[in-house]
Image (cartoon, rainbow, N blue to C red; front, side, top):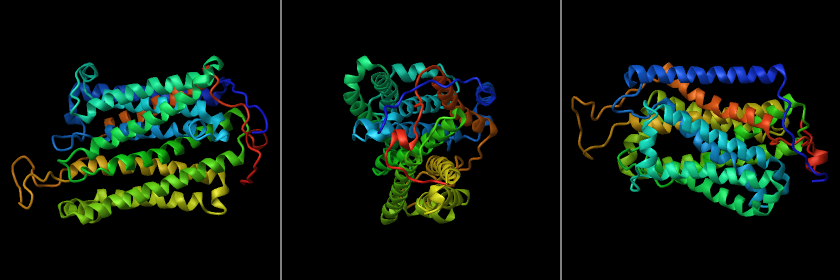
Length: 405
């Protein structure tokens, strides 16, 4: 960097800012209303049932939790790997990571039906369950990243920044491993039960987190009139593209591994060929919209230099990520349990049949509310504290200028 970069809170007095706060506040109130409706009437008003107990709110919640881990990666590149050009982005990276996790956990808590049950989850531990470990990992992530931000923003604590950065990086890897292991350790489901789930979730987190981070950075810079250099955007979008490709590689590996094992042939045929909406979501939503098209845009010699197209690719990666979570979580439950391998099973309790699930509007509103919680927390935080750099132009933030139309 050629010049010292200063941080400053945004003014936050424009009509656009107040409009954003009102919009996000309305979404949150709607989510609370949806929660009350589901709690008051019972979960029978949702699409969830005895066979599919994790519905659309869980899709949003897990996506936000995974993305939170990935959003922190920008800060880790600067602190852990010594890439100084990323350090001006570290405060926003840490803030976004905390806010996304809070958004995801909010959805999970409200989907409990009775939020007071959270007390049971926080005070009664079964350490044989990966869920108990995740309660510790989620709470610990908030503490560790909070301390990491403290070392960034308080000069008297700067001497601890390196060790805090390493601690946060190690914790975010552990957290995402724990989230992926929720599915990887579930041997009862043919769609889960794979050790590759943990590293696959880590790689996916890198892609999702960077896509959200890039959109927040570009939007905040645009509406506050702060210069954002082409080199910074180019660097992040190239890294994001690499992780999108890596996530596709893990998806291919996961399904090829399953195809090698006879016990998983039924599930693979269900997802890849015969699963109806799940097959369509996998090929069109996850692979095409969430993977191949963004890759073509990001690494295209012309499109990859266009800010609107880079933003479009980021949105597609986020949508593809939500679809991937839907296929993984809902599709994995829709495929029937294999109670007696090699035998046909039927009963009056829907054993041996494809389970149905139709997401309801309250579930969708609750899930969107989690995103609104994360975004309104970011919007309010950057108005109160100095998270955003004043100037990230190439002349200030990076001596290597890349022209983007």
